[in-house]
Every structure is written in structure tokens, then in C-alpha cells.
Image 1 (spheres, rainbow, N blue to C red):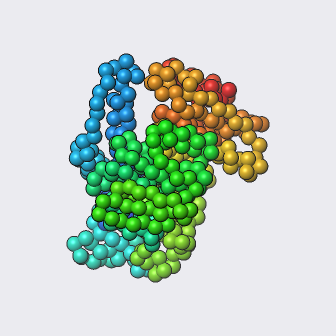
Image 2: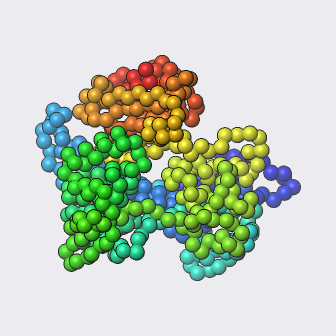
Image 3: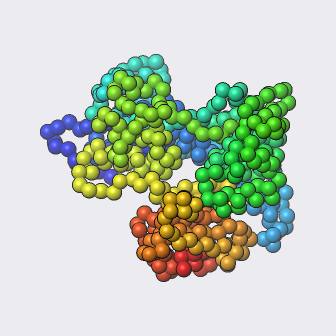
Length: 464
């Protein structure tokens, strides 16, 4: 694509210096370059982002392998002879590495094709417009920037009582895949990442114990949705310690012991912590540039500008939704705003309308306002729910678990949100996400002519 000329020919192009090459940084870089900017991107580890290529992508690759195993082991239910499938751990490790390298190579090639200068190293602000770069080779240089974009991501949160060793006591960064397949994995943390690990390693044949500090798994999700996942875990033999908060870990030669605040003990071969993340804002030089932060996150406005107007922050560092999809759009929005394309009224990012998914079995996805939140806020809503058991395609797939729930405005019929539990929920939620973003009504969904047989038909039925 030829660059779009947005600057006066007599003026030099704006120089973007982007620190952090994850989804936000790379999308900002390519978009700004297409708009005619000079772009320098600094990344110390992996182009594409550690959180994306070392967390998100490997986890979904491992989950896909586990799902393939489950499908083949259940072949008899589809009218096929039973197949005994075994996990080849080294082959899985190679597959993950190959995917990471292919994605990094593709992104690097794209950036280079747009004229982006890539620097392997770290960057820090030494003033509002100055970025000191330390190359991985040890060379140091200072760049003068018109626009600075901070997109350094986050890292797993580790409490003082957790003796992380990367062998038996793991964070998420040690587990894609771990050094060895755990015989009995104890997962601490029952949010999105934690439950995906439970599903993943249970699929591989590991015994799994999940320590749940709240009264349900996925404490921030619809209780009805969480209940389906909890029952699935119990049916699969997962040990659930509900209402237990881990407070210490002991490591021995042959295993680990996790002690909880209520006196319960969990013994296993490995323990994995999935209790959130903290922003990578250390040593960024925020004070030197006059950039305000809060709890390590850069404070930004609706255009993702910091307290210094030409310095932006995106991705996990912005303190907004920590999703790769959100970071990608943030990067593009920053490039457009910094290049002057948002002078006229335009649509700002509405994080309340972002779709998200959890790749468990069954899958879980949601968008917009949740039923419980709407009631808590005193909002009048209409809630309709249809189970997948009414779907011919679900019966053909031999998986009729779950449901579609749509939340709408009772007066106008506008779709306000929805939840999906079941096979391919992460794909199906896109329809509801479009409806929420575009202000479509339940009648729009009801009158859409979907394919038959298809799981999406349940969306139309839930809209009636």
C-alpha cells in the first residue's frame, strides 16, 4: 500500500519512536509508516510481543492440541473406532516454537517492508523528546522523537511467598510448555488464564487442582457462565478448592505443597501461578519526561495520550483492557491521532464493547454489559437465553453443552451485550460484538438469514 500523504512536503516527516514491539507497538508502527511517518521500533525480546507470542499464542496452540486429543479419544461417539491417542510432548514443544518463529518472521518482514527501523534493545525516556536506546549489543544511542509511544506490556505478578524456580514453581512464562508434563499441577488463580491452564493440562492427562480464592471460578464473569465451567471441571475430575487463598509454597525433591489460609493443603508435582500481571514501566524514564503514572500504569486520555501530549501509551501499560485485540486497535488509533486524522469528530474506543473469550471446554465468550452488572446498576434490560441443545448442528457435532444469552434494551431492542458458552463461542461472539458496536437490534439478528445447519442459528433464536 502506498503511503498516504498527510504532511506538508516542505516539512520533514514526523518521527515516531515506539518502545515495545507487541500488538500495540507493531500496529502503530505499520500504520504510522503508511501514513507517511518515519518510524523507529525498539524491542528487546521478540517482535510481536512476549505477552502475545510467548503467552497467548502458545497457550491457544496447546489448547488446540488438547482439543484434538479429546476429539480423537471420543471417536466412538461419532461412529468411529476408538483411537488411543498419546501426547508427544517434544513434538508439541517444536510445534509451538515453529508457530512463534513464523509469526515473528512475518511481523518483522511486514515492518521492514513499510520502512520501519527495528532496533533490538531497550529504550528509556531521558526527556520529553529524547529516547536513550541501549542495543542488545551494548551500543547506546539517543533518538530525537516527535511522537513517543510506550507499549512495553506487562509481566506475571509474583507474590513474596512464591519461590519461583521455573522448574516446579512456575509462572505463565514458564509453562508454554513447562520443562516437563506435570503429573499433578496445582493452579493458583481462577481467572481467565488460570482456568485455561486447568483445561489445557487436564486435557493432556495431568491431574489438576485449582485454588479458587473467591466463591466461584471466573469471579468477574456471569455466575451462570461460571457454573457451567465449574461443572465441566468437576465432571473431568478437577479438584476445586473453593474459597481458599494460597499463602505459601513448599518445594521438595519430588513435589510441591501449597498451603491455604483456611488450613487446606494441596500436594502436587508442580504449581503454576496465574494471579494477574504488573506493567513493565520500570526504568522507562517516566519521571524524566514528566509522564504521570498510577500504580505503574501510564495515565492516558481517550486518545491514549499521557500527561505529555506527544507521548502515548498503549496495550497493558495503558491500564485498559489487557487484550491483544484491544492493544492492536489502540496502536492504530494512536498513529491516526498523532498524524492528525482525528481532527474531525470520530468514534473513540469504547472498552465496554470489547469482546473477549476464554478457551476452555466449553469455550466462553462475552461482550458488552453482563446481566448481573445491569441489575446491579439498576438498568432495565431484557434477557433471553437459548440452549445449544435446540441446535441441529450442535447435535451433529455431538456437543450440545452451553447456551446463548442476549441482553437488550426492552424499549428499543438494541443489543447491549451477550454471553455464549459452548463450542466455537470465541467465533460466534463476533456476531454479537458487531451488534453491540453498531447499535443493532434483536430484530436485526432475528431477521438475518443464517446458514442451516449452523451454531449461529441459536443467536437468531435467542434474539426472538
